[in-house]
Every structure is written in structure tokens, then in C-alpha cells.
Length: 61
Figure 1 (spheres, rainbow, N blue to C red):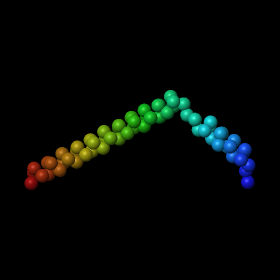
Figure 2: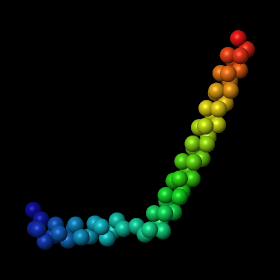
Figure 3: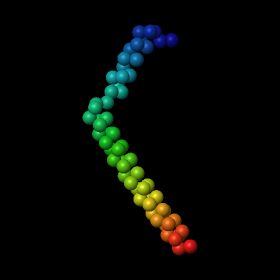
Figure 4: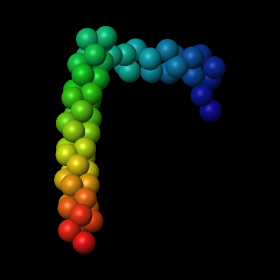
């Protein structure tokens, strides 16, 4: 069983190894935003095409 001192040391070490710089976080978020934007635009284009097809089908009948 680990002593309280060794548990405290492990808790102190974890945040130090998990720290990311603000610049790297900003870059990651910008890349994620760009990817989401592209995916959203693609989905909207697909939905517009489907809507156009449905409207053409309805007006033809």
C-alpha cells in the first residue's frame, strides 16, 4: 500500500505532465473548427441536393 507522501507526489506529477501550452490548444481548436466547418458545409450541400431532388419529383407529379 502506498504511503500518503507517495500518493501526494503522484498527484503533483500528473498535472505537470498533462500541461499543454495555450498556443497548442488554440491551434488544435482552430483545426477542429475548420474540420467541423468543412463537414457542416458538405452536409448542407448534400441536404440541398436532396431537397432539390424532392422538389423536382413533387412538381413533376
